[in-house]
Length: 269
Length: 269
Image (tube, rainbow over all chains, first blue to last red; front, side, top):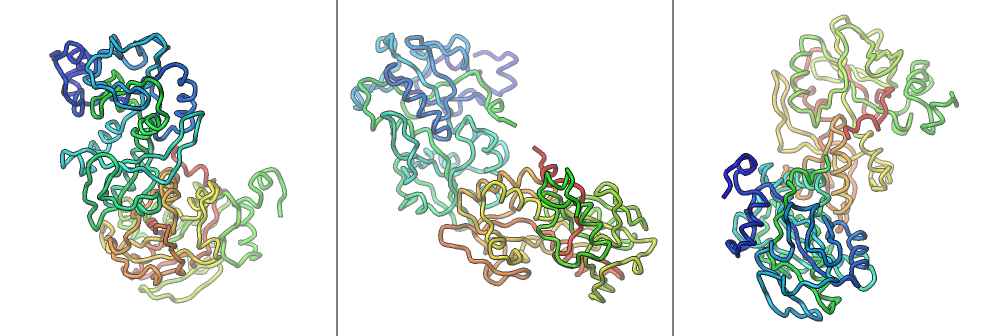
């Protein structure tokens, strides 16, 4: 572990140090809490025949699919996201999908890499949650040590080619004044899902029962709280699963790419 | 009426033109809708022995009391708010208060002016409503042609000397996505009440019945809407009424000062 200047300033490892530990096989656990202050990203790797359609899908749906970077076909580097970054070795766990079916989980995809693959990295709610906690807004799923609850909604994404499907949202219960503050804070972070898409009234977006999320774990919504809903990075995964591409690689849930970008630099203002 | 360049650009009269018509006695009606795009302001005139306390009260409570300008004692001009502005003649109707009791309504206060009076001008929700309507967010009280509903809340203002009392809020029913957008838009306008103070759950701020406002007219809140609450410029009037100063002059409700400032210039970003 490097205790030098940059690491000291963030109170822990840098993104680069985390990736190097992962590449050496020294970290095989989820990445939550690693490299505090650094942006973590969702990964989807698709054959280039899907790349243009998926790029258009992200462009049309920036709230659920905030694209941070896309690789050159066949090139495992992503210099915009990190120095010495190799997308084949730098995440602690990957999922290999064939025809939309999960084929295996692996901790290195060098043997699965192909010259026609394009890696897409999408912003993740860890970044805006950091900003909310930093502001003193409590987040119950984090206090509980559980996954954020996520729901498929009646809101449809804007389709692009073969990619289409419902918007998936994450939900955080907040007191009304904190909900207003959370709108202000997350509005500053369009590259990591941005402002909420809905507030209160789960039935208004097709959610029948808040205590039965489609992904993640339920959290209580107290009488003096409102459920606040953000577009979720599970949306592209759910859409890709519906498209059933011949071949696809994603991160395993919670095992993200840790980048060299700072969360604070994601703020537009 | 002046149809010159400036007036044409805003689709109507300028603030100066409206004040001059009022001074000539040619307009004695409420000011809503006059001089589109120009800031209108609430007026409170107090003897200078109250001035320091009231300034501190405004400073401590910027959301209900966004102070745009205060005059020099005894000086009826407010050059920061308008050219050739005379606070004694340029509003269409005033209220004279003695020991907290409404004594009379007049359309000119030159005979009531004193050398120890200080005029305070406070931002008004007309400015942020302009920005909401401009963005396509419907406001029901405007569609209905009624006054916005206002409520005394269980939230206390921060006291300063003799000035203290409950926060008064205005309420606008909005669909959830519009409520989120309205938080974003009004956050840009801290000088005219800024972001909402509460959303949903009227009982959380001591409002028992939304259909029985303490001031203004009720509006329906539909099943797919949330009540959204902003700090209201009636707060200082309510607080002044409770303090019962020996002498006080205010505008009559709806008969505001029209300034030379542009609403768009109230935006901080």
